[in-house]
Image 1 (cartoon, rainbow, N blue to C red):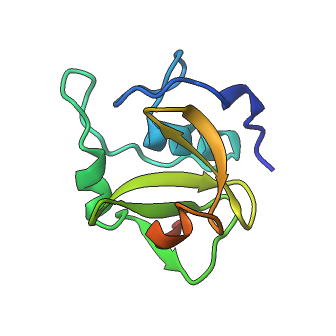
Image 2: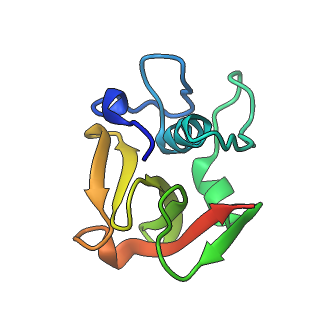
Length: 126
């Protein structure tokens, strides 16, 4: 399992990446994959321009393969309103690490509300 304890409580900031004192939901995925020894590309624009997380997620996680079930080390995609707009890193079969504006980085469960009803899919990077 990827160590994530030091990430818990880290404040949310759109577009932020580690190292640093804050990150967004995709930044956590990038960092967790790096820690797992499987770095992934970060397709977002430079720091001079705001990231479009919802736009990228809406393009169906390019380079990622859809899975029928959650996979530790993969990601889970959620609806934010009616459209995809949030992702988390699966740290177990049911737990995922993600970051929210209201809480910062936290661990939640995909089998509990409000997340269970918002799942779009589970993915692994190929």
